Image (cartoon, rainbow, N blue to C red; front, side, top):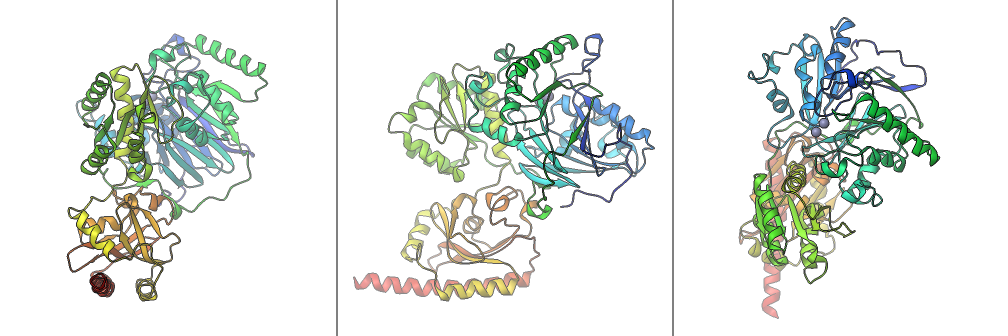
Length: 624
Ligand SMILES: [Zn+2]
Ligand SMILES: [Zn+2]
């Protein structure tokens, strides 16, 4: 998918980019929550978040569309306004990040071209969400009446390119589905994280060092030349605002030091924070850093301010767009909406159950590993909430079951009085908690999970199917020429680099024969072939990146980077579908009906081999 257009004329940057400047950032809005114009916010500004970013090569990116977008739109039009093109990255769709959209004048000019990117939502696309605030009740014009041509891109976590900028996205911790953006161009790195609250309360309040998800957040920021970060509260204010999805200034300064960011800009200023208060805060922070001989530069975002970012590293060669993409163009796939709860304390379990129900989700309670396994099969959860008794008694088995669910990617939130390191635990819900705090945590995790790839359903005849598969005695045997011959022919015939004969076992897919792939097995959760086995019909995916079931599947985003899949079921004469003959490519493909017929012919040859083997095995067992 190409995100670029031929270069078009743009209104000039506020000041020309100097020779060494790789990226220029201008702040058009710095306020969080609600616009706050007035005598107490004259210096730092009253508009909600909006940033103009330009590269030396002229690419224009706007990050977030708070009310500051209005002023930026007028400036862009002052350059004539015709044939403008640019890219807009939206962190999330809370009001203070999108309220400027209906008032962005360049949207109304025919001939302008804009690309808008934002996190893929749960129930509706980015376009529909933005259109929601332009319903006639609120606004006289709908997005259909914009004169400019606008393309919408729903994003997941990953990396993609906008002209000369490499953009990496990562989910932040906020009650709405929110993405942080890391922009790299010409050796300069700008990272934007709004809105975000540390995952661990202990890390948020400075009681412990970065670990787990907070370290992952730090890794995302590592080495930024310019870090623009949510810092709505002070450390003193934070405890009464925990769970609202924002960071304290003290946390952000520590984060900047920890990640070796060169310059950190505190933003998302609280609407009640006056210029005087912000001046005082910045001065205090700088004094503290000076006393510690820290070199990190700290400032508070100021409306109208322009920051030039120079290259700090040699120009790194960028991955090709085909290589890796975070974009999906499909309708969000609404997958699993249940939460598995294993909490012994009845009062706590009830409170959590109520919070889950209040979020419109299903709560499934379990008390043992066996029960957990059954529930996971019947109603695959998006999230598990457990208490810390599992760490002490025989119930460690529950954690093991959860760890093996979704290839280890099921988020597990542990309820405990204190956070402590525990393998397999993703996040913490520390007691005592309010209902709204629990709901925030639950919502954030379920939203994130529900947008993810879909696992194949377990076939109804699973026990009989597995018995037939195992009776063949093929699993974990050496490769055999009679099968390799077929996959070799398949790669040549269909002009694909990879073909496999896959057997779908209880928890894995295992390759009896594989051409062009390195490994011999994958977790069943990620398996494409498991879908074929479940449907008992051929499955063709011409481009995984535009298929909501697979766009962020680990075998798509990571090795072997599947873009094309065609699988034909392999069924025994007792009716058990045990695997597939499949074709894979790292590029999208078309697949005609005649291709499918040829694939069927090859699959029939494999099935004949399996059938002969079945008869042989049956004879052997009679002999003994
Ligand atoms: Zn906000
Ligand atoms: Zn927000």
